[in-house]
Amino acid sequence: MKVSVTQEKLAKALNLIKDIASSRNELPILNNILLRTDGGRLLIAGTNLEIASTQYIGAKIEDHGSITIPARLVSEFITNLPSGPVELETKNEHLHITSGKFSSVINGVVADEYPELPTIDEKTAMQYEIDVEDLKKAIVQTKLAVSSDVTRAVLTGVYWHNYEGSLYLAATDGYRLAEKRLIKSDNEVSAIIPASTLAEVSKSVGDEKKITVLFDDSQVCFKTGDMEIVSRLIDGKFPDYRQLIPATAETEIVIKKSDFSRVTKIAALFARESGGGITITASEENSLLSIHSIASELGENTSEATAKISADGQVTLNSRYLTEVLNIIDADEIVFSFNGKLSPCVIREQVKNPDYTHIIMPLKS
Image (tube, rainbow, N blue to C red):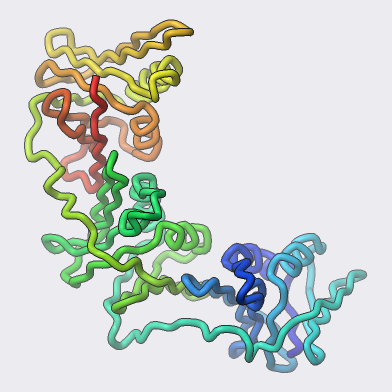
């Protein structure tokens, strides 16, 4: 193989791929990334057998070929080179890299020993085309509710499913729930995608406007013109979470997001000793939402904000959960509703037809 590429494009692609490379001692080849000519482009790929990520960059190709080389070493070397052309040439099991006054020889392994990259049959796969920015936003809004408990594997991913003519994403860790309506679609899909896969997708998509998402029985593929990520799905059945979403609310609060965020963050400063617990009180008569928190060593705090309130109510929540969801909602106004101290609290954007619902379970006060 003998090719010429730009340092900028090669460094960017390597940095996106290198973290996929595994450190599994039983398969040292997974520490490597694959370089292979593909038509008029250079393919750069890495896998840990759970997920495979591929980037394509433009290249001047003199001789076709392939090799695998240590991911971290080549990424750090290319990143530290100056801008400009980089020449890559394989000789036996070595990759010769030349750029201006810099040259290096990296010991590699023949590409035949690298695991075959997974693929999905586009003819039989369930397929969606989604705006990249919409997908990235949906990932942010659902991933924060994913569980880190590996003993409950189905909760460590985001559930993609069709419901009433739309594609929904949902995640829950048992303490909070996030649901996002993404696009209208009649495709019937029910799949749990690892949160780590979605993080790689968000990181890897470039300036593309659209991304194609394909599902088969055991895999998902995210694909743009210059990028492809294929991942295994999580086996198991996602819980029937819709029964947790209250149909009505006794207390409904409409409040500016900026006001809600400010009083929550201030109250949280005094809630660190109590596991983050803050008590929210709504007064219909005074049109005030107040948040109270106590720290036995430091003191206590009560912060208030003006709001439209349908009925008096009180609930105690984890301040971190509330702060995190307020940080990722774009709307100017928030609807915060609940049915008493022990009912789930629902947070939505104040719009006519909100496409995002977030639920936080209350703390016992």
